[in-house]
Length: 305
Image (cartoon, rainbow, N blue to C red; front, side):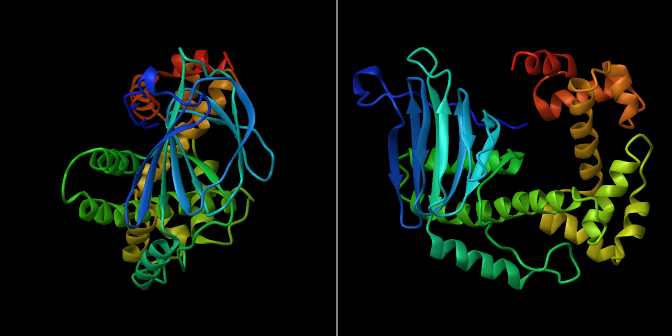
């Protein structure tokens, strides 16, 4: 899980409200807001007037979308929300000593539509998806390294005195939109695959990986079951998902390993072998690289919730 570093907090003598005090930076195509909360509050309503990418920087929140399910919203998480979608937020631990901080980038809807149209013109029609689109409902995802890097650049420019920052930010927005679409696509394809059907190439690939997670999985096997040409197969992974087939396998191994560690209470060694790693030490190193915690630290942290 990739985290965005917290930003300097608002000085105490400038605090005017304890709930979601805002610092805003306005540009032609977007608005960047930094929010801080310093008191416990439940069911705080929130919506944005444009397509918004909001990421946690500091503290803990609980968020609910229209389905009313509670979701832990923590540093390392990002919410992608369409215009005027309603969110309800709980701040169970916020205080002066432990304020929450998040960053929200709202992008002009016409700019989003223009970029999606341009990207759709370049899509390989033999790939995993036929058209990029904006989801109708918010989703909560884990940050990717690309998302964090782009966000950092936009935030740094927004708070700087660079006379060309408007130009730089507009260029970065195009990169950000593409990154978000790829992350969103993975979420959509993963949800479809979870319905346990093989009616799309990606669903067939993902279900094969999950069914054979304990064994060595050859990329050639995924290519064969995808019913795609070799060139389209690799191009779809890179251009539509932003990852390699190998990285998808690793991500699935780690995702399943977290369930085995927490729900099945397997040992680190048992978990490593159960998800196809030949070395528990390699599994631990890879787990820490992706999650920022060792498997044991991850289990201990989950036991506190």
